[in-house]
Each structure stands twice: as C-alpha cells, then as structure tokens.
Image (cartoon, rainbow, N blue to C red; front, side, top):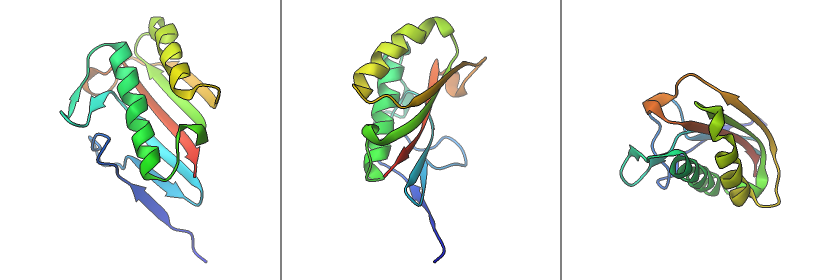
Amino acid sequence: MKKQIKIVNSNNAPKAIGPYSQAVIFDNLIFCSGQIGIDPKTNSLVEGIENQTKQILNNIKNILQEANSSLENVLKTTIFLTDINHFSIVNKIYEDFFKNHKPARSTVTVAKLPKDALIEIEVIAVK
C-alpha cells in the first residue's frame, strides 16, 4: 500500500506566505512549517517578542489540532531568534505552553526572518 502525504491547513492559523503548506502529514508524522507571529484574524504580525511567541504557539496548537494532534505530541521544535537576548523570555512562554512535556529542541540565532519577525518556530509531531 502506497503511503500518502496529506496537506494540513487550519483556518485558525495564518495562511502560508509562500509556496508551502502549514503542515504535512506522512504516516503518523506531522511536519509543521515555521510559524511567525501572524494573527490569523488580522493577517498581520503582532508586536513584541512575548506576543509573537504566544501567537506562534497558539498557531502551532491550532495546526496540530487540525491534524488530530496536540502540543503534547510534539517530538522536536526548532526556534529561530533574531536576538539571543530574547531566549529567557521565549523559554518561559514555551514552558507555559508545553508544561511538563519537553520535546527535543534546537534554538538558533538568525540575521533576519520574514516580515521582520523576531521569532519563528517549527515543529515535528506525531498523531
């Protein structure tokens, strides 16, 4: 039996700003594209590192829900920051969202992100 790739699109997360999907599912794995802090209701980037981080994690939560999963099923996250000095702020918000679940994680500093976002997060999860 040939395995299919399924595209995931949630109306409760911002539409992709390029030629990619919010997420794809293959077998029981969910690969979420990097999310920046865009409010799906206004389609605009929210301001500040705290608001962007919360918006991103809510967007990811909504994408995973659309894929019949949740934050508790995240295996790996990658966080891209434009300023490493935001690490402790992001870490606290991240911990609030993930609670006792601690997926594997990488955090890297980058020079610039789309729409001049301060942070981007991508995740890999299971159904």
